[in-house]
Image 1 (tube, rainbow, N blue to C red):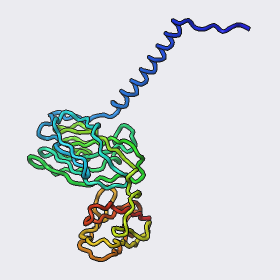
Image 2 (image 1 turned 45 degrees about the vertical axis):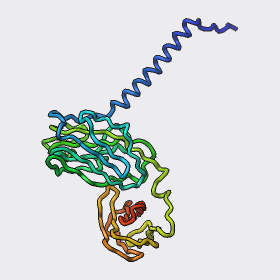
Image 3 (image 1 turned 120 degrees about the vertical axis):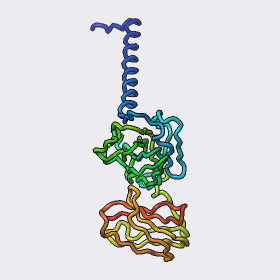
Image 4 (image 1 turned 135 degrees about the vertical axis):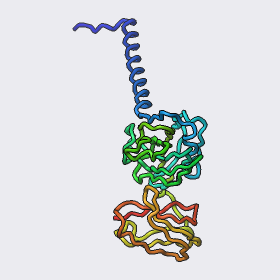
Length: 275
């Protein structure tokens, strides 16, 4: 039986170097691809005076612009939970709109279905947009890219705008910033257990139409709101003093909604399901 010959040290070294080179190239290619896969909008006439000045999300994230030409803010993480409806505000410069996307499927692009907000009001020298963003209830834990565009004379989303539109569109003036939205399931709404004194429940839940909210022993109920997952207020009840409140959701599409007791800032919104 013929014996197997061993490779020489030189051949072994060459093989190892080739293997390491291949691995290094693969890692470098993956890294470049991961960073380069997101296309960017362009602003042909610059950003000074029309840029995003401030972004607030919830009660713990507050970002202020220092250089409107620097768009990569992905090191800044915005912590959220699945099914949250979170207040957000964006202050833009002169006569600029506001647009927000989140790449929920981590595809490296922003689809129309991933647009969370777009509006154009504008003002001089600035305007602050206040709205809520909804986190889909089944969102897996992980990091998601958020893109915020402040474009002069455009809501940044509606096709056909002469001043530009789209997450990678061509705009006249303005800028954009990319942040990281970090979804954390560990403190999700379902994990919060209320005490009997602050119980806030709904029955039946899920419901096909009518349901009753029970506020337990909570005292102030200045304003109760029913919200969609994208932050829109669908109904509101002001100044109720009752322990229970009857609601009829028959006219609403099936899906997930949030009920919020704005008088109790410590409580999380209550999730309800319309079948």
